[in-house]
Length: 427
Image (cartoon, rainbow, N blue to C red; front, side, top):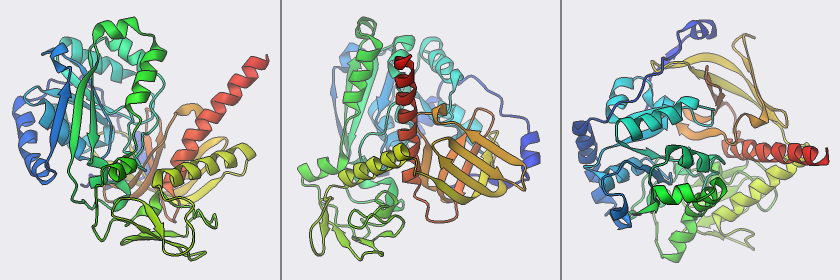
C-alpha cells in the first residue's frame, strides 16, 4: 500500500491551511458490505474461524470494541466477525491522506498516534451516543514488533468510564505469525482465528475503579505470539521467514554489537562476530554452532529493552542520524520537505533541517510511546514525532534501528515519570 506524496518546501507547507476537523459520519452499509466482500480471499486463505462468549449481554447495543493489533488483516477480521453490524474505526490520521471522503464513508475516525488528541473522545462519544454506532479501537496504537503486547495508555480506564458503554474484546491468534511487521510484508501460510467476548458491561464499568479497569485491560493485552506458535506446534517453513528479523533483533546477544545483524532467508547472522542462528519452523532460534543465549525472540527483544534502559540511566544513550523529512499538516498529501538531522537523548527529540528553517523539539513526557514503523507505505523505516499542528516523518539514511528508538522513547517516558515522582516524594 502506498500513500500520496508531494515535494514542497518547508515554508510553503507551513503556510498551508491546516486540515479542518469534521465530525465522523455513520458508516455506509454498502461500503461495509464491500469490505466484507473483499476480505473473503484472506479469510479463505487463512481458514479463519472465531468463537464468541457472552455477546448476548450486549445484543444490539453500541459498544466499544477493543482488539490487539498484529497486521492489516485485523480490519478484515473485525468485518467478518461483526457484519452486518456496522462499526466506526479509530485509525491513524495518515490513513486519510488522499482519500479522506472514502475513509469517512467507511466510518473511520482519524487520530494522531501518540499525540494528545482531545477531539478523539468527543468523536467516539458522538458515534456511540448520537449515531448509536459501535466503535472499534486498537488501544496499542501500533503493530506489535516482537509479537508481544505494546504498552497501553494509562488512561484507558478513564476513557471506559467516560464512554460508559459495554466493552467487547477481540483477541486474535495467528495474525501476527502470518504477517509479522519485520518480515517485509511477506505473508506466510498460517491459520488465523479469534475469540470475541463481552469484556465489561455498563454496570461493571460503573462499579470498578479506573485502576481496576486498567488492570483488566493489561491482562487482556498480555500475549506472546511466538510462545503460542510453539505451544500449538504451528510450523512456518517459508524460506523467507527470517527476512528482516534484524529489524527487531538489532543487537547481537553474543558480542553486543549493534547494527551488524542481518535476517535473511531462514538465518540471522552477526557480521561482527560471525555468530549465526536458524529461525526454526516453530519460531525459535537455534545456533548453528555453540550455545544460544536467547532461543525465544521476545526474550532477546526484552534484553535489548533492558540494555536501552541502562543506557538511559547512565546517560550513555544517544541517537543522531541524517534523515529525509516528510510532513503531514492536512489530508491532501504527505509533503517531502527536505533533509535534516534527528537526535534523541535523555532530553527528548530534536529535529533540525530544511536549510535551517526547521527546528523542532519534543520533550520525554510528550508521549508514553513513539510511532515508528518498518517500510512505511513502501517508503522506508520511519520515526514519527510531532504535535497537533504537524507530524514529522523522519526516514533514517543509515541503519538506525527504529525499534531501539521506540523502546528508548517508552523507557525514557517511564524513567522521567519515576524521577519526577521520586523528587516529589522527597519534598
